[in-house]
Image 1 (cartoon, rainbow over the protein chains, first blue to last red):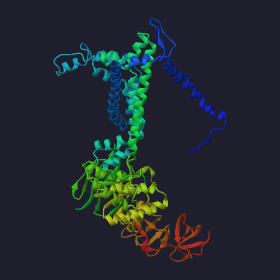
Image 2 (image 1 turned 180 degrees about the horizontal axis):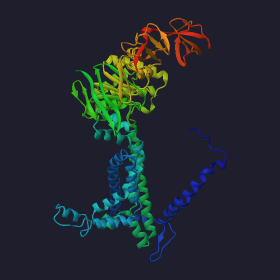
Image 3 (image 1 turned 45 degrees about the vertical axis):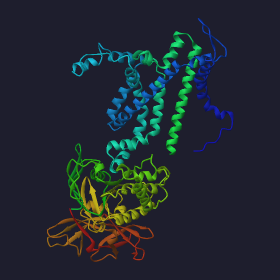
Image 4 (image 1 turned 180 degrees about the vertical axis):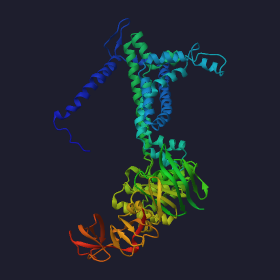
Length: 284
Length: 345
């Protein structure tokens, strides 16, 4: 559909509200953060306006490179785990009776209502030696004695996947519901077993949705700072944990801001790469 | 026996019987159209032949092998869906090559076969186009080519032409029939369009309420319908109550007619007379007397509505044989005895 280009100033009216929201809630805070990242820290105080690159210089160390690398790796792992688990789950969900679907979706939504703190403590109890799931395995005779499963990388990953899973399902659900069920039937009549049909028709037909979901979960997981502290060792702490630490406990706002800006830039870069790779794949 | 055989195939959904005890033999190489009103079970029957639904009773045999429980992907068939179900993420060529790719055929063979099929459906050079860029008729052809790419034993089509406009549909009917004759492939088409069935089929299977009412050649179905449902469903017809006395003299709508016999020991029956088999004459002997109530002049044909004893009889004639009639005029209605079909009450 072709629309007329706006002629008068009043024609831009509908844009005013979203533009204001964006400026107040995104542009202003983000610009403040960028500005602060160049400010000078006052020892024992807060910060004074200045222009120095020391905050960024301090960041260029092996330690922070490692933390950044780990944060990205963790977020990618969470995104992949969530999508790999959620696609078959959601696919089977959409093939169920309407009533069953509603029950599952309500259950998933109720997981969303849990705060990160509750999820963290619930999993730390489940992974503990005294009251954890290993006790059940001992009772079943599969293990000789109960042991603590945390702090560990697996615990961090499990907690974060648990937290992000409902979002993943909710993002995939509309696309899978709209997917024509005769596509898989057609694949079966053409000689594909149900599993082959799933991988040759359902997954490729949803490629754009899957990419979008991966990016969403990745960014969601990148911001997580509580679960790594509750379930992991210090080496499992993400950049978000360090940013919180600098901003709140060390009162070093300029350094925290510099790290946040860097994290945003790296994230945007990765998302752009993913989108470009997706486009290339489509053209090929 | 080579071909497809259905023995007492039944499908129940809860308490509802969608397909009831269907027996049907489709010899190798024949073109069968399953025809019936919506909800008559024809699509369910086709889905059971494809293996997408499992029968709750009976057996399906293909070339003598029982395939009732064989999963769909091992039946080596080709099916065209009403929605066509072309894969949106694949190009025309990739869609057609899909069954070959799934069977891990060598790349060169795939390419050769795709080219062959594209030229068969008059779309040579379209291999690299996305399916979303095709017109309705082209998508239709691609769906047909994809279903035929492994040269299946059985070619199934579920309302394949219903998405096309009337003119294209008629052209595709002829094309599909010619293609089937060239390939000699056993084909089953589900349709609710009787013109489509009459155009394409060797055998028309008329279904209603999950049962086969008649399975015969198109002309046989038209000329010798098995019951009032088939007579009424295929083409238009006049269904008239007839009675015979002990001497075999027949009265239709209370008026005696000559030359028609209901058969031995039948006192009541329904006569099916096609409108083109109803002739109008001057009122008099041997003809039912009635009054013209409406004349519809369609150019190519003329339909005359005649009221006989409160029942409406439709007569169709060509302009050349135009009876000299006008509304309100009394006429004689002659039912040609040798083409009247006597249907049991």
